[in-house]
Image 1 (cartoon, rainbow, N blue to C red):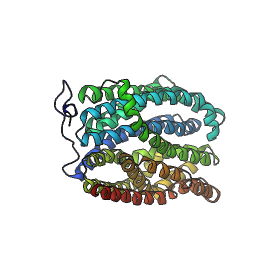
Image 2: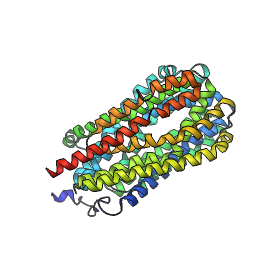
Image 3: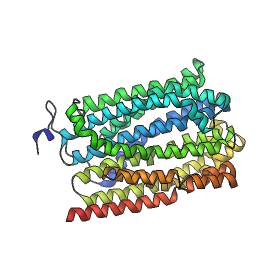
Image 4: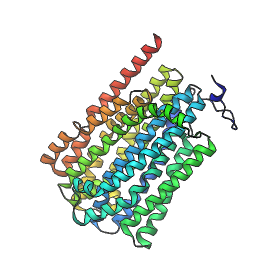
Length: 457
């Protein structure tokens, strides 16, 4: 091993890989817990956006955010896909004791994220209006959603860079500072929302401005933590980029394809819901804000298990890697049960907070009581995807997610819409994910068995 892989010039000796020893359950819970705090905080920021805007008493504004959220979900998912390249390649390098290579990969991942997100920003900004029309937005609702996106889409690059930096921090085991990135974004967003929405009288436009400023605050702290605290970003060079971009793209491309499958499926659900009126779209928009808050721990789990599996994969401990995956599925089940109970008991408060009535309130009740437990299978799919990406089989994540977004969504939603209205749409969307969650778990165990057999040969 080269000395450069152990110590970076001018810095303290690198700490040993954190996840290759000690209690796996403790690692999973700490990483997931800190990640959940950060993620739920940012989701609460989005929820606060929706809450403040709902207080304006204009259903068209709430529906506009619902339409805009489908497009923002798409762009954010691409950002997450780009960050997966870092969380898939950096931890194995750290686990193998190759710190210099890990730093170089982290730096190249940030460069790739910046380039890809900048191009995506231009494309999406120019396509905002036709995309909203495709989703079913019309009239004043279309105009409000368009303005909201025109303000917020240009802030995609700082958000994507913050996501990749978060992945780098998790790769080295610094869950606390990774959490701080999203906490800062949430605090800034929630603090600025009332001023821009109410005090300055900017309404939905003010909400977009506040969210944009929050993203700038996130990326500023993210770079401080990655560069100044951990020295995990080497100076980019042409030779390093040529060497690192093929493996990074090898993960990033299927990871991006994997992640955009979910917003594509959600966009189809939004279009199906739109056929049942603005009230149904408003309810779907509120549910879309409730889901990440209630199930934030599961999103965090899927982002945390990759580095844990990756470090043990790099260290050659296949048995420990398999135990980590099994424990993550058990944690997923426990988190789902807790979230279901909280949603069921809190339905009345949610409806009162958002001041919704009639069919919109009925949709929220239906989802919380009957459909939210089915998130267990989506959580299993997310966890398996993280494992596939880390173990060098990102294409499996791509096929499974697109299968879920198409054959696991379209026929079920179509049938539900025809026979159950808006409630049927939501039911079809959740029921269609059951088979793909189970299939993902089975394939992941098969892959780990094969890797173990290959290592023994």
